[in-house]
Length: 229
Image 1: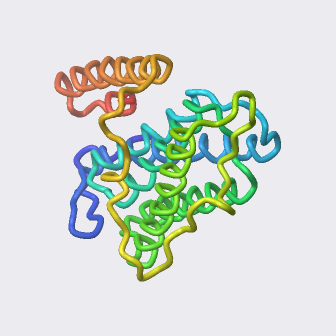
Image 2: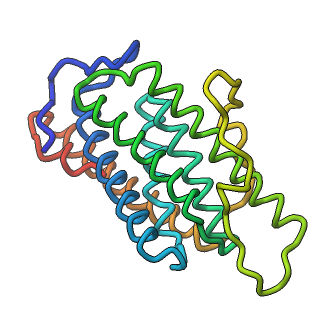
């Protein structure tokens, strides 16, 4: 329930976020994180199960809303997870156990960051640094998958994203290239993923428009912000 209209801004680090917007972000971010954790749990029980575009949506939305409220450390980590999942889906690849462990670690860190934000505190420098290390490890895996595909795989051979033999994660203290810069931002998404994002954007725009109109008509209404996606 959003009940922060007129409340003081939420200060996270050096940034301030309107209280009502932060409440919406918090609810949405935690829901998308739960969905990701649930998907990975299913994948752990059924490692050969095919991934679909619905797996990408929570990571995509989490990255978008985190960046919108000025939380780049969370947005960057969610963004590389989105790129990883997108790459796996495009190339019909499966995760081996070490790679699943890496994804569990990344999602556990996202959960820790959200817990800290729930207390209206910024994640510690150690937490942010850990996120950069994990992001670098994920980017290395994505690049390895892409490179292997470029060299061509024998038709019909199963392809596995292998965290044990693919490039090792960066260690603390090593320089980490920006995860966002490492992602192939200019790639055109395939039709299936594009349709998911277009549908999601349409739902969000319609909901936001209706909510804003109701709020402007009567700012005292608490139901209007609750209706925002």
